[in-house]
Length: 389
Ligand SMILES: Cc1cc2nc3c(=O)[nH]c(=O)nc-3n(C[C@H](O)[C@H](O)[C@H](O)COP(=O)(O)OP(=O)(O)OC[C@H]3O[C@@H](n4cnc5c(N)ncnc54)[C@H](O)[C@@H]3O)c2cc1C
Image (cartoon, rainbow, N blue to C red; front, side, top):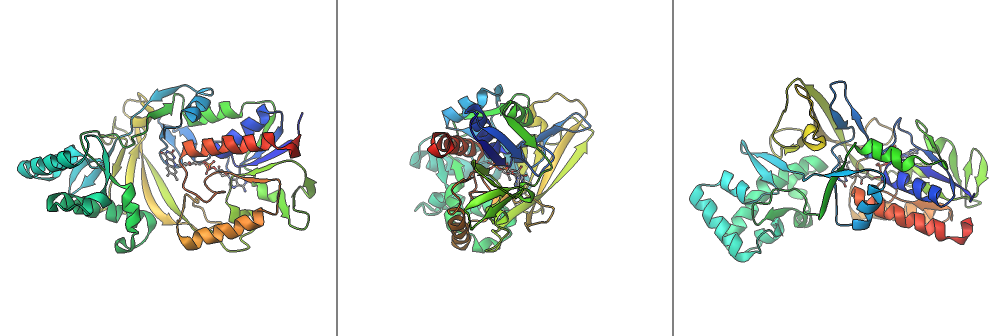
């Protein structure tokens, strides 16, 4: 048996690290302060029989074949192409905005003209950033860019981040595409799948290992403390000699000594309805008129056959306050916040056994596939380190 390793947090970062280190012979103690494993991917069945994602809808999409191959050793997956509609000017249109959306919003002659111009300027099925359309010399193409910016993007993003619409960084627009064609899939990745029995079972299988001991409802920071004089962490007051894989917020780890790293959060409101289906797609975005940003209906994703019952979730963007009841969901990207994070990294650098991984610990908006990829490389780094032989 190799040394003892500690893992803090059991989302994808922590679970993959725990499993990889357990496979390499480490004895792993893993903590999560929540009552459940699976971090933000936690999925459960409600009393009406509908499976839901407690912390918001999670769709697995990736171009990283090795990540999908790794996860496939713990669960079967089914193909799932995510489709999103937007309620815009009282009409439901595909998002990303595509030729069908154009046909629904503009007169037939105008739509034909815009589509003909788009087709002559861009390759079919390409995804063109709205920022490119806005700069286009043809006024009809630039006008479409302006329409999409105003109706699809501006208010949604302002709501999401809690900032005035005109203060939005135009650079963000580079990530908002218009599809040159009728492809109405939300993502364009080569792999778009969902775990057959849900995320929680996938996590149970990842964590099923004799070398892993799990402690739920357990805030690791009540047991693990940084001791800056020795550069070691103390576990229950005793210096700990093995690797500490930390996937929580780095400001919390050091008791907010430099101040809190800002996050944006969501109030997630579930509603059960005694009907077959509430809406015609997994997700409907409400960019403009409502205080929520989107409604998810989980049955479209889980493909469950539960007649006469469905569950939806409304998302209300909110400020995050450390210690409050909401979760730190989205790191707020700014130079100032990155500088603060870098200052925390300087403190972390004094602790040779500390390994940061994941969305909170790296203060980075990561999709699930990128977190799994990162966790696999951090685990390889620990396994190969002579320090833990
Ligand atoms: C609303 C929403 C929707 C999303 N949808 C998608 C999607 O469709 N597709 C996609 O690829 N990605 C999606 N993501 C991103 C995805 O959630 C992240 O990639 C993923 O959660 C990262 O995993 P993680 O392990 O880094 O963090 P988390 O899943 O947040 O796990 C961290 C865990 O650490 C625990 N923890 C923290 N501090 C402590 C402590 N002191 N002691 C014990 N435990 C602690 C927390 O309780 C938590 O369980 C979405 C994110 C949000 C917010």
